[in-house]
Image (cartoon, rainbow, N blue to C red; front, side):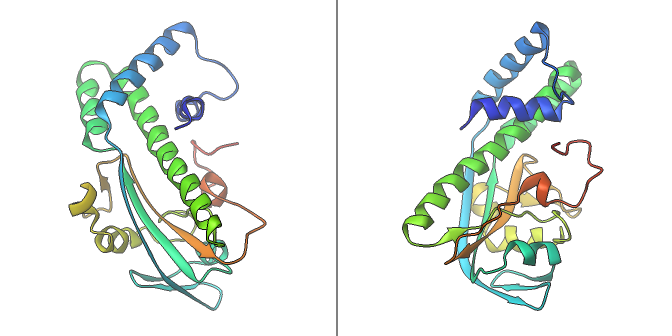
Length: 216
């Protein structure tokens, strides 16, 4: 994984923009990274399936049917879909809960760093898959998660259930659609026989322009 990117994203989540942390914060960051490296256990599961797009927003797969203009735009030109789920495991949550009781500042840093680590884990998987599919003459679109744009968060149920994520990687969903462990990701990735000219993902794909964590 890209350690520099993990640090950069951690600082962004903590509210740093162009300024650099002082030596005290740098030491705290290094300490939290060491503890997280011992606590996390990354796992993932994926599944490929047919994809049908109808009209400007209709999306039909083996796992879910929904209406989403933003997702349909992302999947334009695709006839297959890769669905995946990934988690950092329960260890990160346990660290956060422990330090929330005894050292809140450390809990905040661990929270941010664990989020950056699971995103980088997903990015590293996506890079591997992108190269593997390209060798087959197929091309992957950027990943798109429930909750981005107008892609309904309720689709989490179908993704996690269809992937058997609870049994296979220990990832479940609460009644209020919160993933457990919390440092987890679900997403879909379009598969096309044609390369895409534009790659839009993450903050750039999300319609929440008022989010305090949005990349500039």
